[in-house]
Image 1 (cartoon, helix red, strand yellow):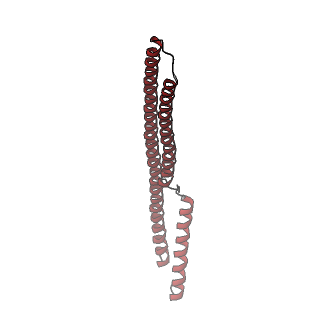
Image 2 (cartoon, rainbow, N blue to C red):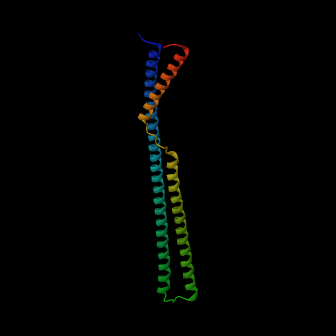
Image 3 (cartoon, one colour):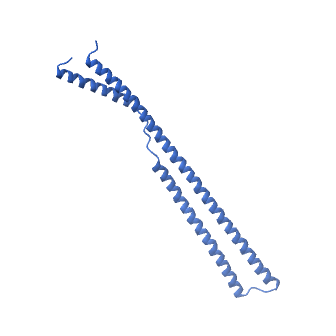
Amino acid sequence: MCTPQAGLLAVSIASAGLQYKIAKQQAQNEYTRQKRQNELAKRNAIQRYSAEQLKIRQTQKQFDEKEYQADIKSRKARAEFLVGAGSRGIAMSGSTQALMRDYYRVQGNYNASLERNMNINIAQYERNMEAIQFGQESQSTYLTPPNSNLMFASAVLNVANSYYNNKARFENEGLK
């Protein structure tokens, strides 16, 4: 014959087993969600890294092209000036030399301006890369893998707690 105490114990064990199974599945689902979140954060960061790298490469290419075009233009202008003056047999006077120095100064300022702008772009690129890394870290979560042993021990302790609580209640009520 089944005593009320044995029946409650069986129900408590079945309930604990079901709760253990549910808790284990929930913990596994949470762990899977955390891994997925970290994977998405990593993919997002990689995509943003790629976009920033493409952007800086394009900026560098534009810089190189502008520098090249300025150099070609400068060489053509100097060549025309020197060939024109040389074909007429004219020596470069002081004012002509001053004009050439001014031309070189303007060209140097232009090249320096290009270089400053490129350095600003590179500095911004480096800050953007750091921001991307920080963004990935802030989007990532701490992984907490499920601990089946701990959940099982908790379920067993809950069953034992229920058993001894019921036993004490029955003894207080005078039942056995």
